[in-house]
Image (cartoon, rainbow, N blue to C red):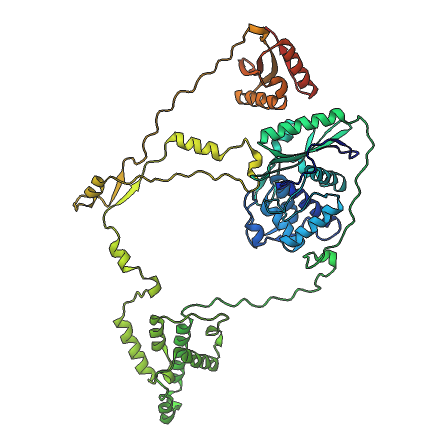
Length: 581
């Protein structure tokens, strides 16, 4: 779809009303609703958003948000618009709509008001979901509304990078913004289901064109197609046209349990102090409580031994000896309360796990006199005897190693792989991991995993047998010399020599000027060839080394072809010179 941004006139369309997967073009609607909510006072750019688990769990592209993290709205806008971060868009959706379904309902309501009749949204970021569809016509319409309805925010779509608080984000559209004259937005999109999508706008003089492409096969092919469509738009659009802004949709306040207190005027007048967070329960809290209880009871007995009648002491020693540990805990709680220490040590807001045998023994040792039926002196003597009989280092049963597994474990020396991957393999993996050719592959659900290296070669039987032989001088660790076979010597790269042919008159060319490095010259040749593949597609790209720099040339062209190609490049405000034989 190609449209004159000023008047809304459709200049070209092909299958523009076909519902397809919009991918991250969806974020244009997420940002439109965000701008609308800010304009009507639901919240501000500095409002703090608490990231939900749903938002933090979104797949790449990501800003790197964590559940419960707090971040300002302005940073989420930058991450969603520039980096196309799925977690940032989902965080905005959950904050505005309460959850994914609530925000999707608002998205669809707004889309209907904008006249997007072929669109239905399911989520805020555009990841592939059943029923999540839109069309090139609808996305072009939405992009035009973004330009006219919120001009104060439109510049964010032309930024190559921005600060998103926890990271600096870089635009997924920076290659097209740099290559096409006048381009200033708007949004890329890519998933494996949608292909490479783009809604772009550009301005030249008084003219401004907006266009949308769905289903590109690669970033380069999509950008070349977009450049072709925008060129067509600038040719067909009148030099001067009446500006007819689209009708601004009627604002509908949030419905349901929306989190915006400003718009609903429901902000609390005071902030009550939160209750004290209960301390987490400990597995040995019963034993600790009983030990404290015994200590308190023992101190009281020592302090009041002269005032305690013998009949009271004998009556205290008549408690049932088979009382459960839970009862002992209650008794300890009462004793602690009576001593003024407090019962919070025993009380727990969560159910306690069943005590293990070791804790049961400790609890029995720490019972007060009224529970065990023994005097404090007898109890202390029994406790000292038990401590002397048991080892000082006690391991709980659940943490003891499996004796059968330990017996079956090999006792021979440990083999360690010490040989790194071959340099050629490392370079290949890094080249694939740092593939910057398709910037929009960083979006959506089709991020290619970074390759890893695993050693699967087993040591030879002779090596294992020799390692298991008992030898006094045998080291405890054997380092194998090399388990990874050496990579074959790479074949020499073929040397391509470009020669100016005199046959057929193809001894003309086009010079693009001098550049500071060979890489910059080659990159400019490739970018130019993609922009004008009709005239430069069959030309040879050649970088000539000069004293003052590196000259980028297209060679092997006819005179007419070279003159036509240079004229087309000059029409795009690019410097070029026709070179002859």
